[in-house]
Length: 420
Image (cartoon, rainbow, N blue to C red):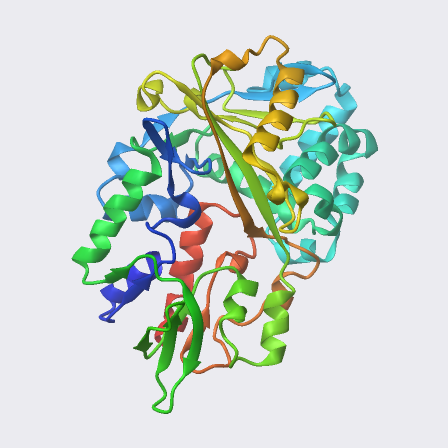
């Protein structure tokens, strides 16, 4: 959507093709009974300048509501608050030496500017060196397994650097604490306003258009064919779907290029959205380090968002990050509900299922690309070997973590390449 807007502003005639029934992708809305909110959890940081710039252009930046939230930590079968320095110093699982090493690791990573050198080191090795084994095993390893599954072992230190950098970005701009933000109405409202802006800019939007094949015809035009064998002709085409999916519809690019795209490893997500009568905790994020808990963490959106947005109900997400071929994708919603509820009751023995108003599970097999060793050096070029074709997706985020701001930034920074 950002690319479409910028290209139109440069005088190009733009058509946006979307395979789904609405725009937004991973930022799209979810109908939960009589409540509509984001399908996956999203938050805006004060340092998310690219997101805020788009929100300003569509007239929503002044409506962002900023909230200071709390963070929980579930470890050793107990729940602790980790929302400020004092609570960190009191945190029982680590002694003072471990805490100092953890703090120094984060501080040192926040000061590193040459992130490319971290792509040459496995994340596990780097964290062990700086934090020590006990801190690594008690804190880092469970969190990494929760976020990356077994893929943590092949991920470079650039991943943890990028995570820490985003956390510190606002503080470097002069803020003493990080504030999280949201737009009333959630991303549904943002997407609707953005879509309106695109249409006002002369962009043609075609929904429910799943592309089956892209070829070059005898006149040099790119023929974009849909599953019903109807198609459209374009001078240039930008594909923004995951890399392996992109090359599956482009037979005419080189084999070497196809291999580079197929070598990009993705993680997917299983993410139940739950509406409750009563709040579960005061924490926006509850990090989990104990084994035996099925989900990555708990995101309690109603500790950030005013419950009036949810008609007095309380919304939480239970994400679990897995490989695209993980058996979890074959499980039914009921199987996932039973397993995840078991973990929730383990953490909160007093939890009663009568508290649940709505339960629905969203799944996506390819969410973000893994930052493996030498990741940026092995990325395929954006400009494809088929003339006029470009493949530009979130895999091109080389020094950040996947979020809306980084995705918009990829579009903004590569615009000139598309206009050459």
